[in-house]
Length: 422
Image (tube, rainbow, N blue to C red):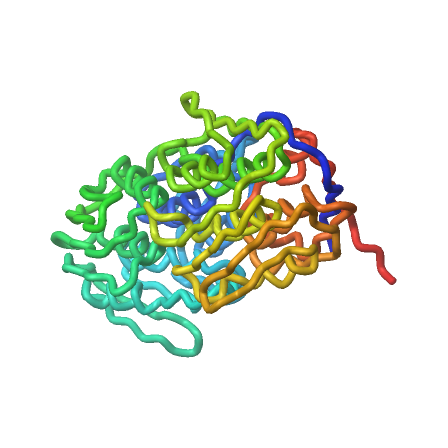
């Protein structure tokens, strides 16, 4: 079993290249199924979740080739199955985004109910109800969603909850439906917009992506195309927080400053004074301790829930007290207990966490409970006194490309170690 060993007390100083966005590339890879010819997707991060999605597409019969730069060509013309099995879907909830493309392109789908992170309920009823509104016949039995439709019909769909994957699934399904589909209370995340850009390049007619009302006029067919995935805003924010926490200087290269306004605002409040230079973002703390900040997570353009744990980590060593309110997932404070093992002063009150900064933290063996929790524990390891050993490294591998290599390039003392059998 691999673990990460982190030596605390080093101030980061350097540049880091931002990878493509995990949360954009997964639905885009699923959307390649809609095409009548191959697509080539570039700026793809080398992540466990991407590998899982590639395996799923391969299981469906799609032909995939990968070049030395991790650009993936997907040929959907060889698809010969519409079954997304439990053994793949259970490892990654995002697998459900193949449901809409399969029904729209092939008239049927059999997709396992998802597994993945244990950070809270993410109901699939939004996906199912939307497809039913578009005329699909759906049964949920024996742990699978079984959907059929000769051709989907355009519909007006109001989403009870703002759901990123729900919006993406229905938007993809609507591209090949007969007539016009309107999705109200749609997710506005940049990753939804990037998916829409790709679909439009394929020949889809989509208006309003990035707003809460998306209109899709169905077409007869879509063609494959080339698309470059947008930069990962959560990876960007995580490395900038690492610089803030260690009192150092970090320059995130190849980022997109326009999609992380809420994070940059909080880092400025903490004393980081971000400087934007085209696609680069730099913070330089000059050895200063950050100030505590308060956040309320919310769907985009609010503060992202995927940055909540990292800001909590920053607050544990900041000057003052900050309050964090988690409004998106009801079970996303599982990292708190591990942070407390390192000396953090955190008090939970319902969906609020009150964090009072300490002058120093102490290294301890810790266990990652989900993807973003693992990032926050690495951040704390960078500033804790001693050597922190983090278990369940597979969580970080789901969403951060070569994390120890990138941090080492900025001076961090971090390495992957093998647990020796007892």
